Image (cartoon, rainbow, N blue to C red; front, side):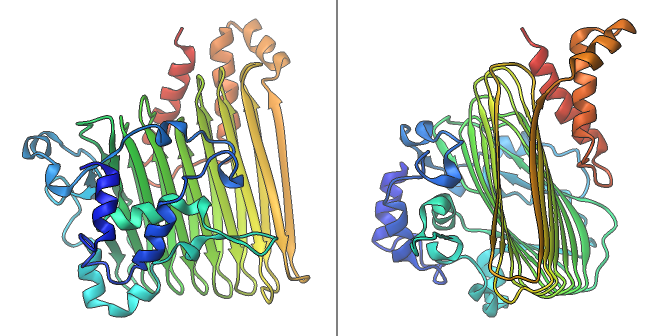
Length: 430
């Protein structure tokens, strides 16, 4: 079914009976407007022309063919599998005794009716408050689209559970049609006193993958979340991560963003002593863009955030990061920082870094910085004099640049290495 036809049926009330927590009229009004483009500040470094110019189709759940389910074999242990945006119990390998519960969003709300008040339900929830006083809903257009099109899956970590093994979230795609719109919607709930690590891996997609994740880290909990994107050869990815952190809770977010991918990250430090540590690598090659918008809002007292980014642009590509820190009134004692370093591997490559501070409280510490540079020719010459080929010397120096922040969590070292090696192999092609 084509997207426009699907939206028209939504206007008549079809398909929305199970989503009564949504402000359907406000969401439909928002997605009837133009999608964001370079005129929207948060999207100025990512082209959306290919999205605008394509007649997208909606992939219904029953469109996943049994033959593909049988073919798909997940080799990673403790995995929660999503195929074409839908949770697949058949291909998941999560142990029954893992202290993690997976359910549909409708079932979770039925058991926990109070939860629907914390979910995204209106375009205003994550809208940008402009200095002019306007509430701009366009930057989060794709969140509204996802919420209408996806049924949602909840991953809940039980109270006071310390889970030692990393849990894998795998997104794979049947790629049955290059004009399919896929909408994974994942809600993660870390209940009080829990500790867990997730590794999310998004495989190559040939269509449009529009992902939404809402994360709720309750009091005294600790979540490490590593989001890794494989090379996207012909498709496109728009992704949103929205994290809500309570008292004495901590988020460690690690991101690897590749070409043809736009990541929108919004972190809310809601309560006292809440913490967010964010580190990311942004890679791009050929004529593609790789773009991240990351906004951290300090609401609770003595909340802390730290952003570290490394950007690498090769050939004619562009990387970009927009890091915004907002310290609200009464968030006294907050401590926030943003640092990015960009590496340009040739003269036609470009990179953009924009730190922003919006501070409404005077008893805070905030710092930011950004630097840009090229490979040190003296270091390359030295390595060549020791018998190392020029291309290999550049790769070794670039590895050192990346390793300054590190994305590894327990059990994912090989995965990170393979993804980085794939990027360098692509650079060496031709």
